[in-house]
Image 1: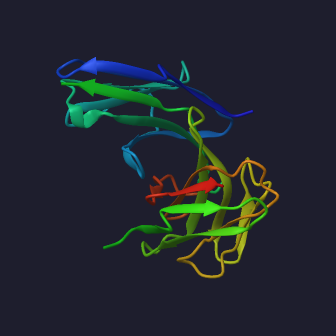
Image 2: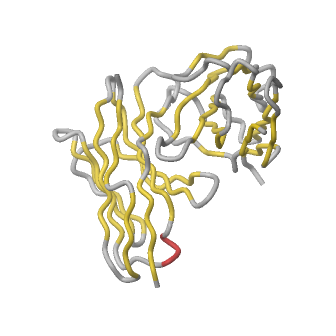
Image 3: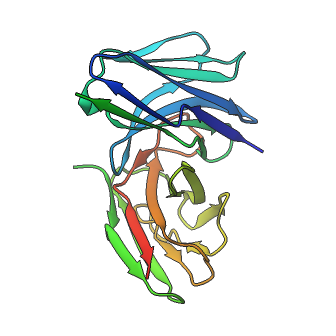
Length: 112
Length: 114
């Protein structure tokens, strides 16, 4: 059975801290791994990772995929209260119509 | 503005009723999806459609039905056969199902059984 697992499930930090969110996957016909940020309602796209070892970066957020370890991390540096959200990791499969297998999410709370 | 519109935002259903959740997109995307989100369980796929007049069951299709009569519309009906329908429902779309592109999400519908 295809599975994506995220850790930790929840995390509380203070502004300025650096956080690392983890995602591991067991997905047959694995194509890519996606990260989304969900603030209350619609998940918004952050990164898509297809190749191992190539870091993707957007401002204070960065992410990397390790296909050997079947895992990915999402790093957030110098956290701000606006980073408080649920971060979702999802595996995409080949020839499955774009179906995504989601992890449980990590709920990040950044305190002032 | 291009995007995905879900309605209503909140919906209350009585036991034994069928209800239909609307999802419309003007992104000209071929593929559309319905996910259900429960606390602590992430998103689970209910149904998806890669082209008009065709759709496939996802992992938790029992108690749900869909139609895809138009490219821009993918309504989801929650039937009385769905025993635990209280959840947050998210509709998504992507350019084409088998291209390696991200999915875009609507704002969701929160369904509560009363």
